[in-house]
Image 1 (cartoon, rainbow, N blue to C red):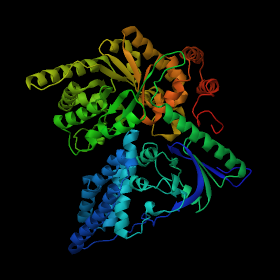
Image 2 (image 1 turned 60 degrees about the vertical axis):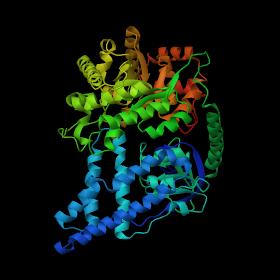
Image 3 (image 1 turned 45 degrees about the horizontal axis):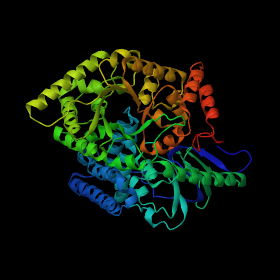
Image 4 (image 1 turned 180 degrees about the vertical axis):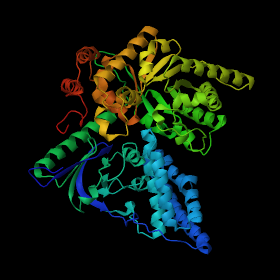
Length: 591
């Protein structure tokens, strides 16, 4: 949008990584690889055409391998992301299908690659899981790397930029981002990308401000334009006027001071002003993220998503493979706890090697525990691996998407069968571990007291709980305004869960995104939550805020909120009452 009184232009995107930077723009111009012509390949030229494609893939792989080889220590924990791209170069869906298309359709390699990557992209975009949807970006980036070598387009070497600038690009791959020299690049903004993109994850590791998904920002920015990047709010300002510059210079200085304070206090416990201690844990999906868990002062891992272990292979993993991964994780984290969530996946749409039936609406179909109970041999393998790893540390077992009592009874039978099988096989294991369920559908909230008789803890998954209770598709931007954690209906649902847990003596942890947003913290504390699990990077921010809150005040706050009926009224009340301790970007003027 344009500023009415100046030439400055404000554009909103998606926060890639927090922070503020101000500087000159450096537009990363890459020769286009979008306009691809289709032409016929005679039968006797098919093999040379396939060889040309293979040669382009090899050049792209070699280039990528060289980047991995040169990875600096700051990004060593994100090595797996670049290795994921390395695997994609030879992925059957992309590599194999492109060769097949060249052969069957007798078309040029560029056209075949474009057709196949578009098909794979469409398939991933249909998935319900936001994390998996964001993997579309990985496929597009790998395809474009190969395409550049096919068409002979010149590429920009990010590492060779020798100016102190802010990068403005249509897209940056994780490999591009990993080449950023921190002494030169202040931040970056892109047309493409989303909150869960691998490029965003690397930006967070580098701790440089970034805004992604700006649509067509590259059309509005020229080299040497002055731009402000506010990574905290996902906003950029092109050619800011003098007042805006002054304001953001001040905000940048305050933000730097704020981050320094967070780093100094990250090792301190999360204790309120009146002495109440909360447990802050981390949500992770890769063993390599343990470094971040430690650096951010987490009390343990409140959610280990196991889907990646399945997606990383072209078949279901064996018990031994799962056991080794879980054992490695628990030994790294011990004596702290690791909560392992069993497979939460949308049937065959996600696992191409699975033979389940395609569903029109996977979010309401055979996902998570429903899928596992329909394939008990797959579930049994995972349960056995988890019980074996539990002999080496502190593990909790978490079952996703439970919607009725019958399901948890069936799960417990399979756990009993796993114990029996391990005894027969004379393997070392530990079956004396806490069993929990995700509370993420309305029926589980309604039945929470009955479900509590079968488990040791509840884990509130707010992302799905909001989606299912509000009847909104999280992928649908037209209803995104209804995706509000502070909706009074959501708050009342959480109250119902807490009351049921209290009556049955079941512990409660929250592991959804709601837990990691400081604005929600006073409400969650007032509802009685004492264990929160979140993105590791959010922990220092939430911890610092807890240390400035009186827990008694939060109970009074929730009493007031439970009488309210509008999201805006609740949000305003929280922001007004806690304006002095909310992090920068949550309470100030650009809200």
